Length: 415
Image 1 (cartoon, rainbow, N blue to C red):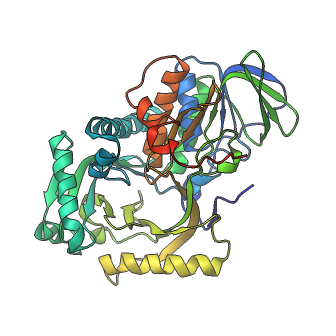
Image 2: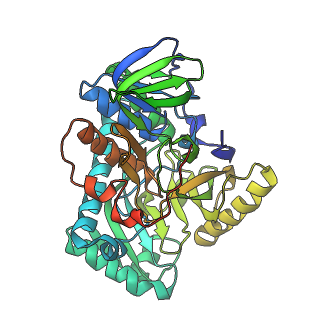
């Protein structure tokens, strides 16, 4: 079992009482089984249960106990790969279609948050995407023009407009409207509880040890405790844990990312409408506020196979991250109260892994690789629901696991 993250985490401190689910203690037969109890699993389980599909979800630890705690909860329709770059990679039509699907997924997340009936600290936000250097300005302007051309709600801001609203000056920025933010820990628990209330059978402390495909085409999952789950469809929603996969997918690039959450800011210091902030540099700095007025910041990605487990090593990097935030917001920036580092996966073509295993019918992956993982998980839950029901989906061809942008990469059999 690979550690996903290390450090001190803010989000779990915001929800005192969570529903507990028993471990699986019997054999079950269902139409669909979901492996993983984080963001992807909760949304997938909710999609199945909401559509009357008999399903079970198993989580080897606790619901929201993995990457959810390290999730910074920014919800944006723009992605790590710019629209202009994605157009060059897959063509204008598919690239725009993918961005539109991401925009719709942000809206779906807002509806989902409201539909849980619980306070998941969802807020509509706009984003400031600024040029890190003067050299980045021409490309950022082309990105703005491409987004505007295709009907996205965007503005172009120059240095004076930025400086008038923020305590820093940048060469230029795209302002995107229609984004959002959530408390991921509260959200995952709320969605999972709602799914359970709709009939999803949820089991914690249940680890899948073996996956067999029967001659009839059904799938048999054997747990470490020796119980069996027989299902027509199996969805692996296991976050950034490639060793849990059983297929022959192209291995993602694993990084570690760092994040901090500060003490609350003074009300007068909170920046313009609490917009989300990020930049063109790669790796990039990204910032938001929490419901109680803290700064949530992340960045300083490094190539890695595991997160740091040394408090001193974590603090060294998060100290650098804090310095970046302080350089933007001044000496009165509140001190960091929480700091962590976590595994972060990126695919080779900057798109998530969402679709049916090319070699095994009825096995699906919902892996929201990239900085826009929450949005990808929302998009993917609907996509996989469509595949399970035998219906078309507007971006299934773009994200399929044997897509042309991946077929020339060397596959790695994982598991």
